[in-house]
Image (tube, rainbow, N blue to C red):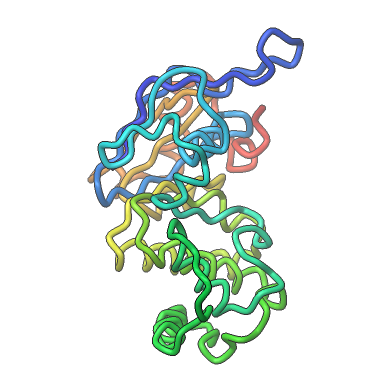
Length: 266
């Protein structure tokens, strides 16, 4: 479903602030893969997601989605195929619009807009049923402005919006980092549910080793713009946090003490 071939990206080349964010990176995701991505600050995780989403162009290499070369495709055109949930609960929605209006915008993503009624009666019923599956009572608040929702409620809504048209690829960009632990666990549970029910291919960035191990069918770890670990199948099912830290030490050449070390690593 996603094929990344030897992509590289350097910011501020030729200056004192030069930073090689991605270094000849290759990655292939099969249809239905749910891949968690972990690594320290500066490892290249966000750069990888932004390159796939088309936020900025890569310096070299190519990106294919479902067999189509999208390397030169601008971000707004990739949005037709890619759903994304951001770290900041304030992003990904229009806070001054109602929930049902936000869902209507998501349903029309990638389509031509015309002068017709914004939310039809049939759509309103569909949104109600979809919201009900979240188990948060949002189906009874569809006319509430999104800006009045809590961070967890908004992330749950954004997840639903991102998957409404069944994207070819779902990007989850540390989408629970700004939430409290209980809310984060609920949003991750909903993420698993939405990915599984819709048969989505997903790429999820996280700083939390436990979450990276627990969720998805495959785990990759990045360091200095490269993928240094790629674990899937039975190996991932039996993976422990200690195993992951030991494997990292073997490949990267230094030992991780905890998630906090991973979070603050430059």
